[in-house]
Length: 127
Image 1 (cartoon, rainbow, N blue to C red):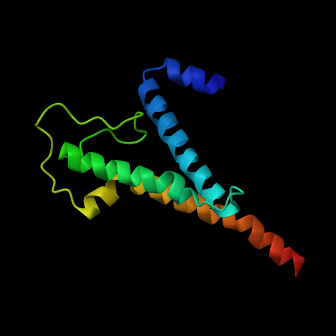
Image 2 (cartoon, rainbow, N blue to C red):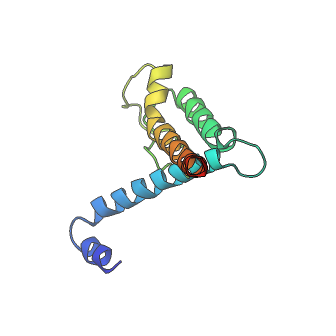
């Protein structure tokens, strides 16, 4: 951590903080993906518990705000509509919403793939 403390004291601290927030956000979704393939012991898939509701919240916020200009991930506890009407006038389509949640979905999928590797290697070693 001393390296991070030295770097954060410099003028690039905002970039380091942004990178750190983005990295932790990605690690969260990768972790959920790993849990998805390993199993939580209840049989519930983490898509139903986390990713699906997240995509639904982003979709509902996009239609409620009539914009996709709310903050990029990591989101605050709730998605806040922009105050000004000077936002982009993108049509809210399924592709625009998919673009808004692509990082979370990709990281979750990567975590799911990573979670499949230990059982694969264990089965391969058992043969």
